[in-house]
Image 1 (cartoon, one colour):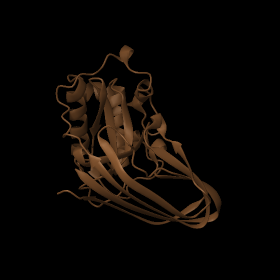
Image 2: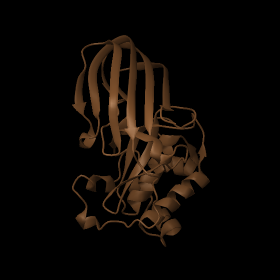
Image 3: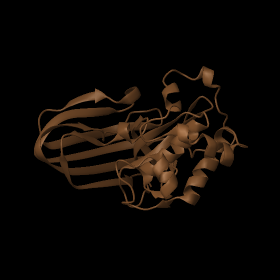
Image 4: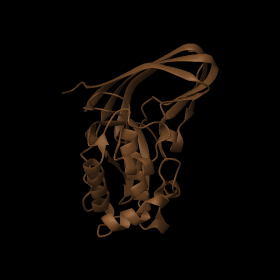
Length: 260
């Protein structure tokens, strides 16, 4: 499918600060970037760098006062719906080097705190069947409540509170998967059919020798996901990291199918 993406960001800086944007679509085997453009106002010249694992890119700049960003892109996505059932977990000793770090606990995904819960709830399942059961459990036990979490909320906090937004659902699935010995990473993305439209956070799990997309919220079909970047947790996929204080004024995201 061909998707059109339009994203606006609007911030205010009380003092000059370094900014790191991560809003540009990653060029990957199942999503082909046809065209894109990033315009940022209120900043110095921009310097792009490769993002984690060289999937996508980030852009450095420095701004002051009112800072606005407008990103547009057209992307062809060729991806069948993901079917997890029957996918095998890989032998940990044979994992590629770049995959190994996604087994470890991270700032927001305290996998070491979920060992007992994962064994008790999902101990009889393996591989993709276990991940599918975890995603179903999260959808069945968590309420999607905008504003119910903040930048300090971790997977353990979400597990206790039983509510959150997309980043919280994703952190919990990642922590559970890693506790089960299945590599999992977070994906920052644009999402077709997401309502209300916004930046989206989902998960990729490593099964049968490759990464597979999973949306633990169930709010967007994986065949309409457009990746921006990947990382250990929300720390690595933030669409804007500000090295200084920034006042948030607003943002808008639109993802529209062009070939329907």
